[in-house]
Length: 349
Ligand SMILES: [Zn+2]
Ligand SMILES: [Zn+2]
Image 1 (cartoon, helix red, strand yellow):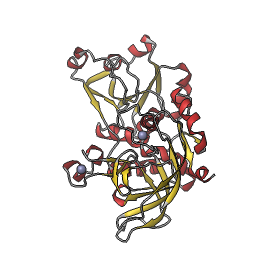
Image 2: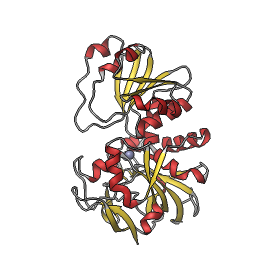
Image 3: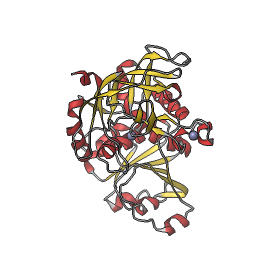
Image 4: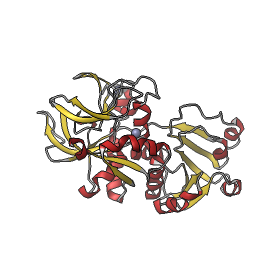
């Protein structure tokens, strides 16, 4: 069937209204009427071909929430009318050790919600800036938040799980002092989630103007990282640092804040590498540097349930689809608190 979408025909073209084809639901498929879709920084990189290999037309969007409008004959977990979400993954090999462990995000054949290979229709996947999507039930998530929160739930499907997964993997909880570096789309979720997990949260920002906001998001302390005295006050005191900054920066300034055996995990993807860290800053306190990519499907469901239980949603600014090009420019300037979400009803206009 044909549905309305918003996407780009080439790297140097703005996003515009497009008609795209969606497959008829197969036996294991769930057809979703999309209500809202969050706007992730990856969308902008991909649609402008700033990472290699963008296929056109490119319809971004992997923070999808909506309502089930049809299910295939063999779908048992979902029925028409259910509130559901789809994140960054719509397929994977389903039999490798990563898939068997529920870590489809690390499957070598993981298929992204947009710009991934697909057979039906042949070509590449098209994402959530659209009215409808058809997804294998394995990759569909259940939403237990109140329906009124639905738009603010959308960013949990990427920004939420990207920050939740490392916080859980490194067992952040009560008694831990946790740093969150960067207060943007990812960082604001990192602060909320680490706070909800019971940790003492220290937010790091380059901008004095974000101090009040960070406290409101749930940070216990805020450090302006340009201020050496403020940084020094936290030396060797943090158990874990979640670094969400995508721009290349000096990692050593943060390593020195970790305790013995502390870990800093990077979730931002810089276009050019960070300067290589000073090895002595790792050796001297047995510190670790790590990375983490979104999360698997079972953990994404766990994250959504945790957020529903703790009343955690993103801070959002709702836009119409035809405002997306302006929204990208504002996102590049950091002028969003803290995630744009497209109202999919605007696609019909
Ligand atoms: Zn994303
Ligand atoms: Zn696999």
